[in-house]
Image (cartoon, rainbow, N blue to C red; front, top):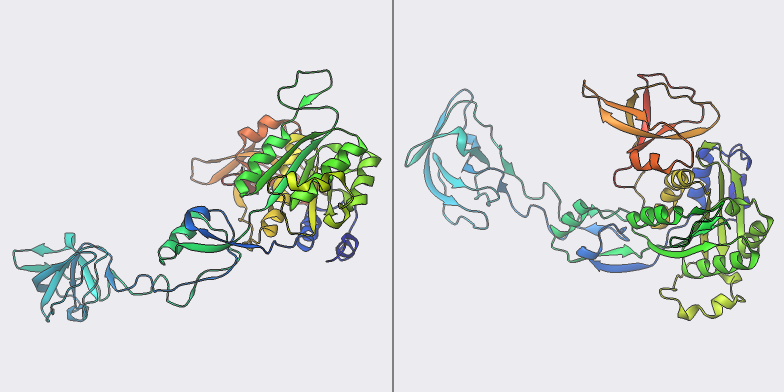
Length: 445
């Protein structure tokens, strides 16, 4: 396992006081190692989990040639260019039945969608395209071509071929695909355990009375929502005061139970010496200033579990539910305390890292492109994530406008936005009408 120093030396232009967003992403890609523990889950339990092995199709899908339409099945070799065709109806076949008779030249079968195509028949004409009498159908010229409306055996999946690959996220469509193979369960990586805590003497828990200079904790609740959407098991450790003993106990509790730890608050990124000392005592942590807006301060590192053996907390570890977590270290993410900055930092860096930790190998969803409906001020030299509202313009193209005030404490703007306008490191002010990239919230927030 490489140390943080080994990883950072490989980053081009590494500067802890002015890290680019791309450098942070590259660092996390090398730091995070996926979990390896595997569970076998039923399909109804596996939604949102990550496949731990390829799913090899035990059958072909569909398992036989079948009709894609309600209509009439016949041998398409009888079709002649520019000519109609008259066929005698000699029977009918329903879905789930097999035709045991024989169909001769000049004959056809009435067939329903999904019904097996009898041997020798390869074409279906939809029932609405023919003229029918009691005994015959007539096809006008140019109605169908040989092979039309016939779904071939294995055209979806071939027996013995991979249907899904290791590292894929099990979406509703993927669950349905597995079910179409007749499989009742799948191997998946275990669920991640993520501990969250807020730091700061000014933070109020819900239910506490207001006091001057204090604010209610919103970050734990937004993080809970983001992590739950991601499929993580969330361990909420509450609010921790700016005291060395309290911080050490909280970090040790989090590390003994979780794969990852997410803190929020300025103290988490080194503005108090005892926080740095506590983190360094239990592992290795890098404190950065990231060239981004919002969310400049960030801490990333590891707490090693073999350093927790002398802790009074770990001596009581058997009393904690779901404490088992076989990894030898917990990844630490120290987010800024401003609510919007914490959420943006999570979406930009932590969420992709957690997906990798889950064993997910899928690429990040592509950013949409939309036309700016207004001037968006921007200084080169930092990546900006501005809250935006994407809509459809009168000409059918996508357009985006900001939510207005982009202050990192304006949490209402995140509730009103449906995406983040991502302005790259070297980009300057955007003029109205220019295309910009947008990270949409749908499925994430």
